[in-house]
Each structure stands twice: as C-alpha cells, then as structure tokens.
Length: 280
Ligand code: ACK
Image (cartoon, rainbow, N blue to C red):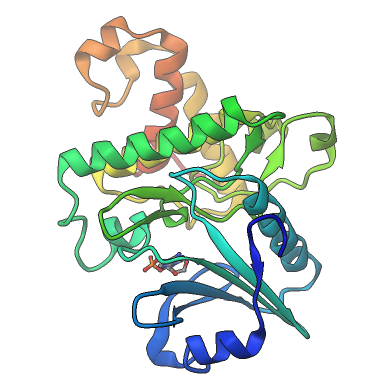
C-alpha cells in the first residue's frame, strides 16, 4: 500500500478485466486504453493500461500516482490502486459510469443527456476541484490539462477531475517545466511566454464553460504555430468592447472589467471558427 492506494497484482487485474478483452474497453485515451474491471458482483472499477511510451509516459505514470495518493476530494477521481508488471503500467480508478464530459458533449448523444441544470452542476463541480487544488493545497497544484476529456461523470453525473500526469506545484521549479497541455485550452500567456500559474487552469476552465454553453469543441487540430498566431492576432482586437464576439452577453459586455472580458473573448475566439479574414 502507498498512502491509501493499493498495489494490485497483475493476475488479479487480468481476471477482473477478462484478460483485457476488447469487449471490456471503455475508451481510448491519450496514453492508453481504459478497461472495465469487475472484481465481484457489485464492485466495478476502470483500469487504464498505459502504452509503453518511454520516459515521458513513465514520468506521467509516477506523477499521477504521487498526486492521487496525496489528493483526495469528492470532485477528483479516486485512484484505487496501481500495478507495475514488467513494462506494463496499470492504474485502477473508481468507475465513472457516464464517461467523459467530452464524449457526452461531442459523442453520438451530442449532449442530449445534459440539461442546463446538469451543465451548471458540472461547472460547479469542476470549480470545486480547482478551488481545492489552487486554494487548499499547499503549495497550490496546477493541473495543466483541464479539458472536457479529463472531466469524468459518475452514474449521477457528478463531475470529477482526472488525469494528473502533467500536474505540478506552482513555484520556482516550474521554470524548467516543459510546455504541455492541449491546444485550444492552453492559456495564451503560457503558450506565448511560458508563464505558468494557477490561472492557466482557470483559462482552460473558461474554455470548458464555453464548451458547456455552446456545445462546440475548441480548435484542437491547429498546429502550435497556427494556434500561437491566432492568439497573437486575437489579442489586440479584443481591447475594444465593440469588437467583442456576440456570444458575450450585452449586459456583461457593458459592466464587466475589460480585462476579464478580454480573457473570456479570447477563449471564445479559440472556440469558435476564426473570422474569414484571419489566415494563420
Ligand atoms: O469518454 P469515455 O467514454 O470516458 O472514454 C474515455 C476513455 O476511458 C479514455 O479516457 C473512459 N474513462 C477514463 N476513466 C474512466 C473511469 N474512471 N471510469 C469510466 N470510464 C473512464 C473515458
């Protein structure tokens, strides 16, 4: 046992996932497949089997275990156990029956299960997880990869934050941290200047809020250079209230501090197709 997280025998996981059979695949993530595991009649869990991804993958596996041993919160997915078996790295999580927010919003059901009330509740759940990481952890923890595919929903649609492979604490050592995250969610000051603070998560959370509101995905197929030039292009345009995209509510447009609007609008520009005049 490490903290309250169990070290689980590989053979047990083979049985629980029916030898990692295709029929038990819950989905595919950036670092590997996730399988449904049945330990007995009542107890289900999700097992992430990491692809052998070299040093980066190994570092992310260790980071994920180290953080989730320390961090426990009702809006953060619980790590129940992990397993190291030769080259194999397995992470065992509580089962989140309704999958990711991304698959709910952009999958075949196109968000039809998500009422406005639920969307609001999901936003509050994620905000609670971030409040915990930024305000109650000492030193504060920056997740660095807030996005809809890392927000999981349980059988009652309670939202929990997952994937702490890239999480870091704020502080001096961040100077050498490699630029990472997901394009479309990465804060402009981090992308352009490498400046990382807990506000980078807040920016990404803003993108998630817009996804919840408008049901569209941010522009994730852009190259880093395209994304960077889009952000650089967007910034000066957004210092003028009258140029703000129509998605911003007129009352908010009039009353909100322009610096905040500027940030909201920058997110909106990243989420919605750029104007035809823009050429990356
Ligand atoms: O969107 P999904 O259905 O929900 O597909 C992805 C896939 O695995 C890769 O991340 C699903 N997934 C991840 N963790 C869990 C979990 N703890 N419980 C249930 N499904 C999960 C995710």
